[in-house]
Length: 195
Image (cartoon, rainbow, N blue to C red; front, side, top):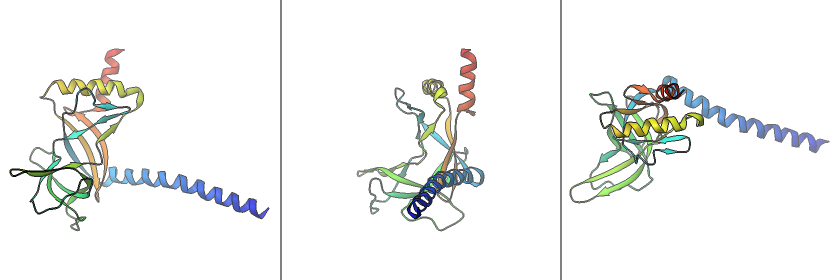
């Protein structure tokens, strides 16, 4: 009988732990969305034949390169901290990339990774892999979102950006906009046109 109680207690502890971890992640993301600073990251064109992978839009960003001095030793997939600010047009811009977490509470930064390292006699830069390069959509709306995004790629005058909440280096991708309309609104308009 004692063994059954121990097994039951262990089972309940495992269930609570399994519920706690996702709940903590959700609460953390909600905190970032509600209290983090919002930045607009201008997106760059991607391969028009492959913007969608399942239920998400694959995003590339214009502001993803940082020139560095040759004496810096960067390593591919290395953890880095990208210090950002807002440019005159209201979009996020990189002001610095460092290997140690910034101690200054007055700067906003993103925990990211070095994607590529490029060095020659004229240019030395790293390409940054942001943790928010996928915008997930409800499966029933994914096809319409894909069509809208492909349509955007045809017109180079369109402005597309991701709205990202940032707090203490952590990020949450809030939404994707095309010409100041969010993707949800664009998809709903497409669905209404097709009905």
